[in-house]
Amino acid sequence: MADVEVTKLAMFGGPRVVPKGQRVPPWPVVTADDEQAVLRSLRSGRLTAASSGEPEISGLEREWADAVGTRHCVAVSNGTTALSLALAAVGVRSAAEVVVPALSFIGSALAPLHLGAIPVFADIDPNTFNVDPAAVEAAITPRTQAIVAVHLHGLPAELDELRVVAARHGLPVVEDAAQAHGARYRGRVVGSVGALGCFSLNTSKNLATCGEGGLVNTDDDELYARALALRQFGEVITGNGERSYISHLPGWNHKPNAIQCAFTRSQLARFDRDARARDENVRRFLARLARLPGLMVPSCPADRTHAWHILRFRVRPEDIGLADRLAGPLRAALMRALRAEGVPLSHYQLLPLPDQPIFRGTGGHHPHSLRVIEDSFTIQKAHLHPAAGPLLDRYADAFEKVWQHWDSLTRHAEAMAYRAPWERAAEIATAEWPPALDDPSDRAPRPDQH
Ligand SMILES: *Cc1c(COP(=O)(O)O)cnc(C)c1O
Image 1 (spheres, protein in one colour):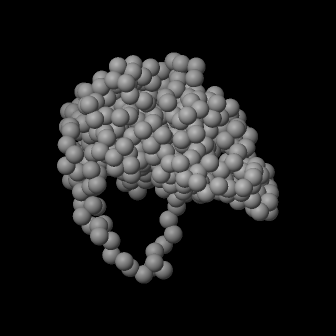
Image 2 (image 1 turned 45 degrees about the vertical axis):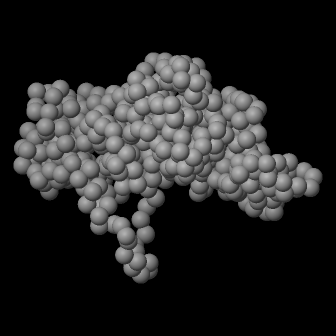
Image 3 (image 1 turned 180 degrees about the horizontal axis):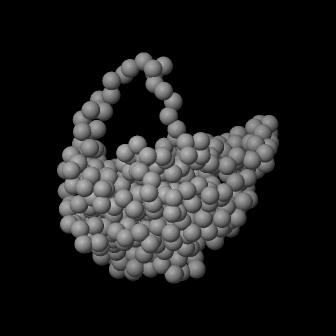
């Protein structure tokens, strides 16, 4: 990239590395087969899990149980309800405590809340972004009834260590694998290690539906029966024969729809191939970025595989002899510079979960989660398409160009009026709620986010 070396940063008026016309390939990919699957289901007239003889929901459940390596799978309306059902199935009751990582998607913490339970937050390991088993153990009290193990960004959590902690206290582990479809941990597919494993099929996830959906896996017959009944008003609905309308458990209506399951089944047929292509693309991309001083790229221990759902990069000034306090400003300067070059960077969470407005005051100090939020940025969705390799090559060119301007970036970082992400979050929280109910026709459409 000799020509790039002398080029001005796009942030200061130079040319962009990633041309404006180079679009992020859409996700999920929708093929003619996917369209046919949706049409077939729509025309069958059997559209819900209560429809007699409906083949797509039970088909997806069987195929996903096989893919994960569990005896059972229950398809549900989304990933958050998958977690609520799993926690209810293991017996989490109102006023119980559930240990949840301090850094995750909000759904991990809302699920226990929806049962009237209290999420108690445990800090993460700043190298893996997954929950620290020692912090989990420290968060356990006599009121704790479950541990939620999130495989954040697609990297399996320390499941063996977590299961040792859980066993010591007689607690079930529920896996939140919403970001980690197909990832393996010491030879086992995530979602098969805890008492139950939960997945999301939201369009942003590695295994998607055409909207919202979720899956719950388990090997345990009794947990399966409970999760299934809790999905559908507490009823046993066999799919053939007459429905009894007898409620055995205080269930919800979290049934999925057949069209969305048909779409996901069709996606599942090429899931492994897509995952292999993504793994190759991402590893090549990360190998180039790993050479940039002061940047920590996501990594994957040899005993597991990574689903690469989100790529999180940390900026580490202390590694290159710069002051630690520059971590946040440098991260902000790099985001500005890289976005100007055409790399779609985002924050993934401005706040640790316990600092969300709904949990404020629950206490606890989570320095690693805070630090990672301050010094990291993410790439989401752009790398999911199996043919994203050439685009990632352009992104790597952009990173390399920006790194050649390191001195001016450092000066930019030192001079900027910096606000930490959680300060921005506090301003957003005050400005956004309660919302002004403006005319919806004024709102410009925005791309999907998650
Ligand atoms: C997406 C996600 C969820 C929730 O899934 P939905 O289908 O959006 O409800 C839960 N946990 C994690 C870690 C997620 O990424």
